[in-house]
Each structure stands twice: as structure tokens, then as C-alpha cells.
Amino acid sequence: MTTHRLHPAHALRARDVRVAFAGTEVVAGVDLDLRAGEWLGLIGPNGSGKSTLLRSLVRLVPRTGTVERGDGTPPGPTDLSIMPQSPELPPGMPVVEYVLLGRTAHLSWLSMESRADRRIATDVLRRLGLASFAGRPVRSLSGGEAQRVVIARALVQQSPVLLLDEPTSALDVGHQVEVLELVDELRREDGLTVVAAMHDLGMAARYADRLLLLERGAPVALGTPDDVLEDTLLSRVYHHPVRVHRLDGHLVVLPQARAPHTPVSAPVPLAPPPHPRSGHRDLGDGSQKPMSRKLGPAGPHEEVS
Image (cartoon, rainbow, N blue to C red; front, side, top):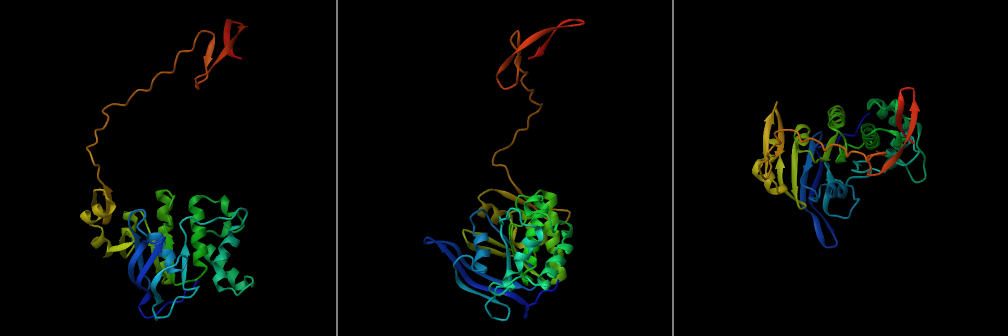
């Protein structure tokens, strides 16, 4: 898969980007200079404007300010692709047809996908290890598989700038690493510029070249993970004490307990089940069932009727 590389060095510039809903500003004066091929991580607490900022760059929400390509021209429909946080997976739609939706930006009004479009989709599915899933319904996939399919849809647009909104939401740690490693590999191979909103600060530090920390829609820090992930700053922005550690060469951000935690010294025994009344069997839900008596070879015994 080839992607159009933008020149000069900056793939995208944004100046004084602002978004307001019902008179309340949720993105407040963001400036960006994205270098071609870099990974910028957007971090900040819930409601800090990460998702809205991404959506504003592709005009999915009204904004003010300017967004332009590296050559100073406004971005077109094929210059930016976005992977939403909660994509809609249509019931019954095969994987290959869902991925082909990413070619829509290249099609004229009422035109159909060409053989070239299908070749691009097939190539992306192969590179992402999804070729064998092409005919399966998208809703039959596991969480990790579905996330890769959504990334595939964004990649077939062949945009030089890829916007990811919580690309590992609802995934276990193994699938998180799998998806982020995949994006990083494609970034290095194809020269993609990645902007990703991320909740996991440790993962953001591991994969992003730079981090932009947002607080109530406003940028409060921009720099390398070592510069931005600072105890005092994060504790203030997240309204909770945190400590930043380095483990095996990676930054790890740990929240601190507000009060000392006293561990239980011994396991707490479970309460024994209530003894059934004579002639009744406890069914475990508070009800009891009468027992019948039968005669067996060794004498009378009870069974549930």
C-alpha cells in the first residue's frame, strides 16, 4: 500500500482551533504542527476535548480556526482518515464490504468501487492478517479482530494522516498491544502521521513521539513523554495523585491511594448454606422443594421430585 507523502516536513498544521456547543467552549485554542511520520498522542481526563478535537480536524463538528496541509492548502476528503471510538458495525455486512467503505472518499457521486479499489482493500486485509475473514460478517468477529477491521477501513482511504479515537477501547491488554504495534508498524513502513486519543498513559508514552495534554479543551503541555508525564502536572489535571515511574525503560503512571489500604490478613470464610428443613431440599435461591421417598435395595432414600 502506498500513501501520498506531504512536503515540506509538516504533514498538518492547525491554528487556534476552537469548538463550542451551546455556547460552551469544549476545544479552546489548539495549535498543532504535525511532522510527517510522527505519532502524536492526545491525553487528558474524560471531557477534556480529545475526541472533539479529532472530529473537528475532519469537519465532523463545526469549528473555527485553520487546518491546512504541509503545503498550506486546506485538506481534502482523502487527506485525513479517522477511526471513530465506537464505530457502527452493520449487521450482516461482510468484512470486505465494510472495509471498502473506506474508499468512498475517492468515488464520485453514485459511482461504484473499481477493481483497483478492491485490490487496495484486499491488500490491506492481507497485511493486517484479515484475508481469511473477508467473507465473514463484521459482527461475528472478536474485539481484537473487529478493531483491526476498523483500522483496515481507515487505511484503505490511503490518507497520509490517520486519526485514531481510542483505538484500543474495550480491549484486553494483549489485544491493545497487538493493535498499537500494528499501527506503529504501518506508520514506519508507509510514513503515516498518526494522531491518537489515548486513555492509557503508559501505552501513550510507549508509542507516541510527542504528547499533547488537554484540560477542559485547552492545551496545557506539549512535548516528549518524558516532558509531559510529570507527577505534579498529571495530579493537577487528573484531580488525583499519581506517580510516574520508569520500568524496563518505559514510563508507567500509577494512581496513588488517597488513604492507606489495609490488606486482609486472612481469607474471609464464606457463610455455609442454610440447612434445609426436614423433608425439603434447598434450591439455592431461597426456595425449597419437597422430597419424595423411594425404597431402594439398601432401604429408603430421598430424591428430588
